[in-house]
Amino acid sequence: MPVTGGLPELVHALYAGKSPAPQMSTPKTARLVPQADGTQPEEVMHISSFVLVRKGAQLLLVRRVKPERMAGSWCLPSAVINYGEDPGAAALRIVREQLSATASALRLLDVQSFGDKHWDLCFVFHAEIPEVGKLGGDFDKADYFDLAKLPPELREGHREVLEMSKSRKVV
Image 1 (tube, helix red, strand yellow):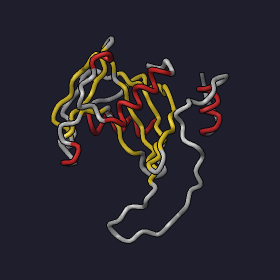
Image 2 (cartoon, rainbow, N blue to C red):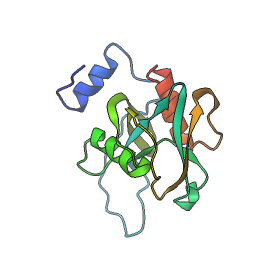
Image 3 (cartoon, rainbow, N blue to C red):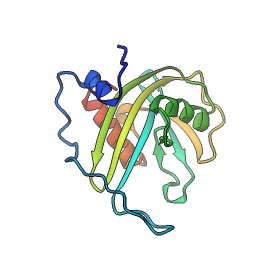
Image 4 (tube, rainbow, N blue to C red):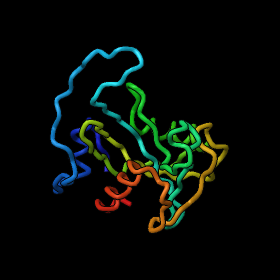
């Protein structure tokens, strides 16, 4: 299905005839508030791309070693989108930088929005890759897991993205 417009047209094409998920947050008003160096605002927004790589009924996860507070946790290949970067280009970058692979058949599966003081807007893609290469420096291991038996160390936010994708039947 070709989508030629911007984000509103994309969301309409993805969710035509469907009501928004009940777990979506109430609308927020963005405020630009200057922050002192080294501090973060109370309210934060992340716009990210997630890449689902499957082998049959299994899903590829990577295990983090950096940053230290996330060491040992499993996650989906993902990253915050750089300012001005297209979400699809970000997904290709994620596959290249984190998995040392070249993605083919990249396809947008879902757009998710959730959170409260930490609000996430997530573009969820499916990509096919021939194999996982040398992992990026933030990771020490990549492995495929059954969707029904994901590791308990899976980061909670990534589990939430997967659960919402399952509930919308895009995974």
